[in-house]
Structures are given as C-alpha cells and as structure tokens.
Amino acid sequence: MLKKLGDYVILMSQVFCKPDKSLIFRKRLLHEFYNLGFTSIGIVLILSVFVGAVATILVAYNTDNPLLPEKLIGFSARQMIVLEFSPTMISLILAGKLGSQIASELGTMRVTQQIDALKVMGVNPANYLIMPKIISCLFFIPVLIVFSIVIGILGGWLACVLTGVITPTNYVVGLRSWFEPFSLTFAMIKTVVFAFLITSISSYIGYEVKGGSVEVGKASTKAVVVSSIAIIIFDLILTQMLLT
Amino acid sequence: MIKVENITKKFGEKVVLDDVTVTFERGKTNLIIGQSGSGKTVLMKICTGLFDPDNGNVSFDNRPFSNTKEKRRIDIRKEMGVLFQGGALFDSMNVEENVMFPLNMFTDMSYEEKLERVNFCLNRVNLSGINKLATSELSGGMMKRVAIARAISNSPKYLFCDEPNSGLDPMTAELIDDLIKEITEEYNITTVINTHDINSVIKIGQTINFIYKGKLWWRGDNKSVMKADNRELNDFLFSTELTKRIKLV
Image (cartoon, rainbow over all chains, first blue to last red; front, side, top):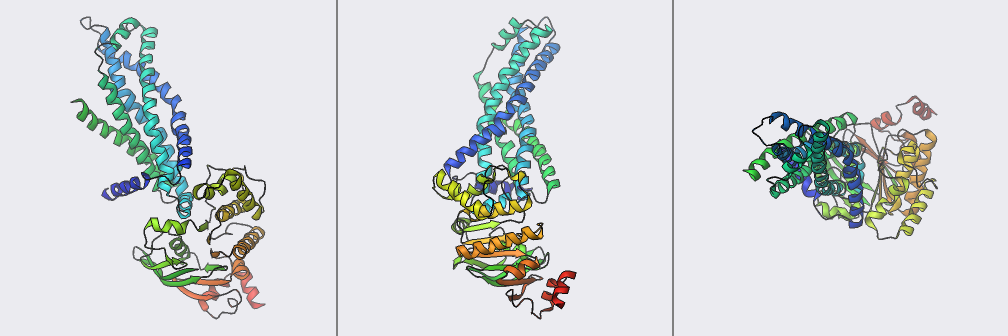
C-alpha cells in the first residue's frame, strides 16, 4: 500500500513538469477537453434532471406536515443538489465513465508498448499523456457540475409541475430562501478535488498495467472502484473540514 | 558505436544477463540472437533505457547512458529510433501523424517541411500514398514498415529493432531485412537487431552476438556462423528440419 502510494507520488511528480512542447500540449489539452469533458455532457444532464426531480419528491414526501412551510421543500432540494447530489453523485458517475476510459486507454498503450515508444523517443510519457487529462478535467468537471446543479434544480421544478407535490411558485420561493454563497464554493472545492482524484488515480492504475488485455480490463474496473472509494472518503473529510 | 560493458541484470533471484560485454559497430547490422528467454530482449531494453542494469554500463559514442539521470539520457534518446516487435504505432493517430510525431516533438520544422520528410520516409519503406490511413487499416507488414519510417524520420544515429520480422510471411520478412540493412548502410547508423530468425542471421548478420543463458556465448558474422563449432550455437541454428538439411548440404 505504501509502495503504491509512493509510486503514485513519483508518477505525479513526472506528470507535473514543463511540457516538452507547449503547442503539442495545447493541442492535446483541447483533444482531452472534447474526449473527456464534452462527451460527458449528455450523461450528466440526463442524470441531473432525474436526480433533481427525485430529490424534490423525496423531500416533499418526508416533510408532508402542515406545520412546515412548502418553501422548505424547494430550499431542501436546492441544498441537497448543491451540497451533495451534484458534486458527489455526478463525480461518482464520472468516476465510472472517465475512470474506466482513462485506465483502459493508458493500459492498452502500456501493453502495446506505445508508452515505451514514447519513452525511448525521449518524450516524458507521463507528462505527455496524463497532464492534459488532469488539467482538462480540473477545468471541465466543475463546468459539468454547474450544469448539473442548474439542470437538477430545473428537474425539481419539473417534478413540481408534473406531479403537483408543491406549487412551482413555492418551489421557486424555497430555492431563493436562506441562500449561502459558500454552498457553491463548497461544491466547487469538492468538485475540483474529486476531478483530480478521478483522473490521477485512474491514470496511475492504467499507466502501471503489466500483462495483457485481461489486466487492462481489471485495471479499468480497479480504477472505478478506487476512484469511487477515494471520492467518498474525501467527501467526508471535506464536509467535516469546510462545513463544521 | 554502442558499448555494452559488464552488464548484469537479475529479476528476483533469476540472473537474466550475466556480465555481458559487447560492442555494436556503426554502419553495420549488429544482431543479437538466442533462444526465447535467453535475455536478448532484456539486453535491448537495457540499451534503450527501458530497464536499468544491476551492474555495468551502456555508452553511446563514449557518452554514458545507463545509471545516469533521465535528463542526461534524453539527448541520446532523441538520437534513437526503435522498432518494437508489435510496431507500437500510436493508434489514436493515422500513418502520417505517427511518422511525423518525432518531428513534431523535437524539431522546429514547418508543416510543409515535416510533410516532405514524412513522404520521403514512407517512400523509403515503399508505402507512398497511405498518409491518411488509420493504423487499424494496416497489415502486419505495413505496420512494421510504418514503424521503421517513424523510427528513421528524425534521422537517428542508433536504430534498435526488436524481432522485426516476427509474425510476417517469408517474403515480407525478407523485405523488412533488406530495408533495415539498406537504411543502416545508407545513413551510417548503428543498428542493433534482436532476432531468432535464421534467414536474417544468414542474410544481414554483419556482426552476430549469440546470447545463451544470459551470457555472450559466441560472436562472429554471417560467414563464420555457418562453420562455427560451438555446440549451443549449432543447436540453436540447426534446430529445425530445414536448417538441418541445409547444414548437411
């Protein structure tokens, strides 16, 4: 375990150094923005609509009391979406999609000697392959999470309109009540940390693959599992550190 | 010239290379031959810096390479071309991008200059006009030739080929052998070829280094190899029915 942690730190030290050619790095960064970020928009939006709707219906179901004001439902749904559902749940989904994608891509490159080819040419393969992935996700995943928050809240509003659990007006009033801007800051801090964990852990696991196609498959699964566990652990740590 | 001096490499308790000293000469095709598991791939990986030796040193034209810092190795690495067994072409790139890759990374040439060089290299390996093909559309022989084009695109001083004709039909294998020999002589490159193909040994083995059980067991050329009285070398060379009959003739 300690050896793996040490290997991970060494790999990250190779990743974060000056790129061999900045023009090539910019091209690869743009490619990764599309490859990892842009292609994830669809899944994030679809999930967010339903998560927002379900969160609103669940809060309404659990606060079905005439003593509690209806706007509390909008407020609670917003807090759930902003503080936990969007940053954590969507990051877990992205750990599945991006984690397996990154680990299998790098693992395949490793077993087909493409990484060795880069190394013997004099290219720093860790920097060339992994840094654009990490940087693109550090920028793009927060954007996805902002989309997710907006669409999640919209999903809650749709649930109000379609199911009538509360009036859309009371939902909107609830959304605007007791708003703390730090909630968004908290969500973004979590998102950036999770983005780093997903990409760096998956890259490490993919980069270190030894063997053949079976090992690439195993690495892909391992990347998802380890990234997800890391997200949950850091979720607890960050929540404790920043909200109490 | 590449000098390999007293190289020893162990994996756990298993000694894979035991005090190997060998010189690979410039402008010649230097072959490393031996049975599977004899240590020849490990020797090549040590020469290219993919493995570090436990003892000994590799130097390129008197410049130390093994056991030196990565930053110092990079200048030598940029002078290397490597042909991997499976080609190791980048599957996210097409043929042109693969061959252009070393030029993109290490030169300040304009796109037109790079394209001219890519076309020259592809023409050199008899593959003109396939610039835009994806690597998945290439046959095994074409992959090897594109990999050779990529290896020579940046005008290397040292060319390493790991089993360049494994998995190829005899005609394509012959073509690859001829190509490597021509390129070596034409550009005065130090070429190291790792093979267990007897045809290559006879045809292009200007110097032959036989590795047996991790040791340099025999050294010679393609003229002396057929007459050598080394038992292990003969067992290796004349292990098939065809080569046994050739020996008899």
